[in-house]
Image (tube, rainbow, N blue to C red):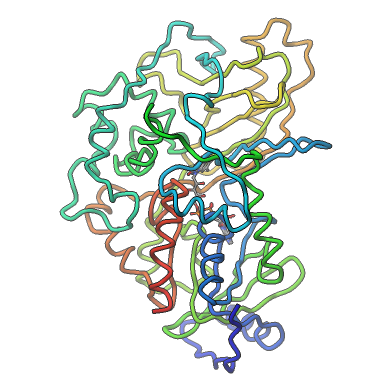
Length: 467
Ligand SMILES: Cc1cc2nc3c(=O)[nH]c(=O)nc-3n(C[C@H](O)[C@H](O)[C@H](O)COP(=O)(O)OP(=O)(O)OC[C@H]3O[C@@H](n4cnc5c(N)ncnc54)[C@H](O)[C@@H]3O)c2cc1C
């Protein structure tokens, strides 16, 4: 690994607030990590980037706000056993090279599974709000009309900039797209396959196409060899190995509190659990979701602020509950009893209660159209599982209480802008931000929510960073 011995740069004080300047100045004098590149975010794109940059002989440090790497991956290990349950990201499809390269760094064995073979169990539709089971509800699973339109844009999920001129369909609300193509009967299936998108019908169709992209759709075909999953069902293993491997270059439970960036240098002041750490780097790679709240400490200029302030997000939350009594192998999906609005439940709500490889432990996924506190989500999950159990399990009142074993918040998920921002060239301007003030960007916001697209995008970006 290359560690730079260049003399430390003199800070040029530009538009700093006095507070930011003071903290940078104080920390800078005492505690400095010099690196070729600083990476913010230790999830899919941040860890992939670090591993590739190390191969390219560049030194790095990663700043991650959680106490562990992994981003949207979450694995629970049943206490006292070697049994793992993945309750965040499940399987990986799309760019096979990047998937194999990423897990190959730490020799994590992968196996391929066909979607049809890993279903969550026998599906039962229940209105989670009214506790009414809908025994006759059979949503149309045929999404071929949508797929036909998605395949017209094979590059959409691999790039930030949108096709020009912007195709009208991408900026339609999904409600209008549904009406235009007459696919009302499959709306529920599309909604269920785009968990985390919040209020699906009001979203620009672009975000549905990016989610249900060709790689995702291909993986569902009966002819597909299927998705990759980790053989030990331990998706987090690769991240834990990387975190240990990176040593002092992995700054977890840490956040950037002030920064200075110009065309030749980046200085970050990072609050870690034990100290204030300064990182001086030639480049910065931002991989966390670039919401205004996340980006603000980076000393934004007007151009950056004008872009990041446009993003809105929704919440996706996942967990595992200990709840006995449910019939083994049965999965419960939330569907509104009312026929209006395609049986879509009103969010915030639980999407599903699904069996796992351990009897009695169920996977739960919850969606919210806007920010919610984690304690409110946790409480609503437990309440809802209890309510559904009372509806479908005889004598449920005598069973042990529902217990939340594991929980992970994925707010902010799937950053979006309005259709008019899209039409006004937002994504062209976002794409043009690459390299501005020595700062580069990767992650789901710049490609798609499919992890292999994020890795593929990162793979193509990195050679440009040190050109
Ligand atoms: C519940 C769920 C299930 C999914 N399932 C799949 C799946 O099965 N297959 C698939 O291909 N994709 C799946 N995805 C999507 C996929 O995981 C993402 O596309 C991928 O993780 C995106 O990578 P990223 O690096 O952009 O973001 P992340 O992996 O989320 O990494 C971003 C990192 O930045 C950190 N961070 C955030 N804010 C800050 C801050 N202010 N300072 C420092 N660090 C910060 C976060 O903690 C996180 O670790 C799933 C997503 C979710 C939410």
